[in-house]
Length: 440
Image (cartoon, rainbow, N blue to C red):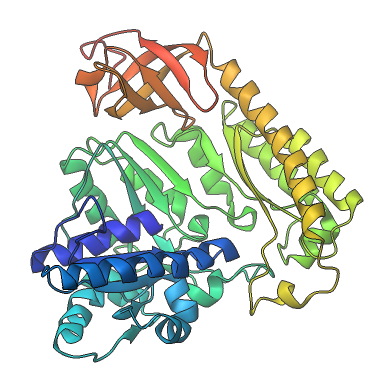
């Protein structure tokens, strides 16, 4: 979602004459778009601001004019006043629901210090104010359809930095998707903190589910692939499971975070599901779409987690089987209920458990990758590779696929025979040309 937000900030700044720079050095405007999910990400903001302070001074002393520095995103939302206090070099701070105000805030900052903080939660105003046109740089794009969270997991800051759940009207989403398709985008990833909680108003005023929206987007000419992330097990409705079976454009890859395998820890996390209910949901999804590849999120070292609790997580991983996953040590976030819980786990224990979990997840990921060798998969070519004539694309399961002699096929979906696996990708050979009936 931060990638999407960054692209949309570039869109709102373009009418002012701003264009993307390859480097912060010498830029007229630098925007740090930030994430507050983990402590390390927030700490990086202040480190980066120290580096930018030097650049700003050198630019001014060298006669290059002023450098405006903005901090945007969730750290801005959560720590805006603290940023202004600790880093006077910052010219403005802007929350994730207010970045459409960037042009106005920059104008104010250029005249005087003015209003340096903007942290409203009016998501509908933001989307209404964004330009209809979008800059695109390839055949794939992100598309935010839902923001915010009402789940209040005890470890998470998102409800406090992104606000309550808000779903964009279907007309707005469809219009943006049509613009993207007209510009050559073949694949969209629908974004939301809880994207499968989507219930945006339709043309008749009735609420549409994510499944209904997916079916409508699949009708757009040229839009051949649809993905969505991030989902919550509580919001995986029957019609969305059915869509996985029936909508060809909906890719057979699902990111469905579970976080832990211990029911005791899941309850402390306020996840409102059990390990068994999660596994039964996975079974239903695979019954609907047998080739479904599963991705997940895991937290180790949550307050009170015992070795037995951690072993329950390993058991769940073995039972579910993941094609990919993201795993982290619990990060204590100020203001969340978990931060004040007793039984905070020692850092060395967290590190050990994370290494053991990641070893199992890596084993599953490599096994899934190896299972694709010998298959022919439709690959959407996204960009040129490192070598002349080489291109890199994505399989339906979001794997990177390197192919020689495919440099002329950027933006095409072509059948590729998978020949080998690497540490983080696949390699293959074109099975047919763009004129093939198999090619999209």
